[in-house]
Image (cartoon, rainbow, N blue to C red; front, side, top):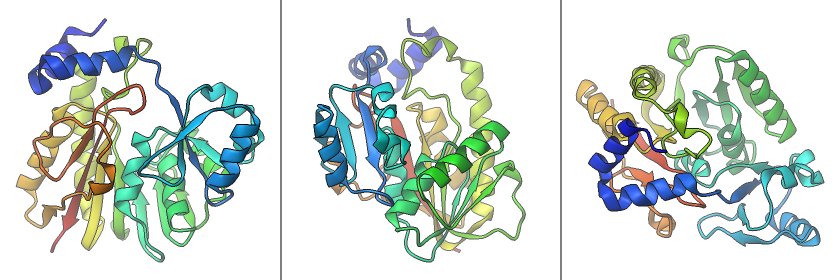
Length: 297
């Protein structure tokens, strides 16, 4: 089931015990999770509606807008009016983390470099009650249209959406904060349907893209601004190793430790950078990597 290249990488990086945990997650059917869209609703309203539809749920300790559903799949949720009206957004718990570390504040200029389908873009807008100015970029035309639809559907405002390649931004663009949820191999989200598409060639190709995107992001980050880099990969080649290389190339940046005190119950994998977070894939969480870089001069 597991491609030999991936098996060797995971055992080499995490050991056989964690490899077994990771591969068990690949075989699991992950719980459906959602984010309450606080621009249109409240968690109390959503809980009441889920109760009325006999959908059991669990709250998430570190979030006041996230729910884990125990007896409903995504297709079940799409039939509900709360989904059709944009009051909720189907989003994995792990992918809800990067916007929390961006911590958008009213009036800030924020860039979402690879934004489609818009879950993190609209989450940042909701976190700041539509008081941040977001530029959301997607180069793929079809995904760009989906991004625009989701932004409008969820009631997110003050967002400029660009159908361009984020690696070639006009030089006059400068931002207080940048979220780069980079294209990656998806090694933290694999399942029995997708694992056969995984390959060494895919990883090698995406590592080049990831480096290019980080270097471009740093050109457009203001001094004292933060870059949040995230992937849904758990391979160090796409995460810590890239960050180490970037740090060696740029003397005007430093790593800022993530405040993970509120996430103590999240399953994690060991990291080579103390200030980073790598979520271990389980039947609830996708594998995810997050790190914060600050431009200091």
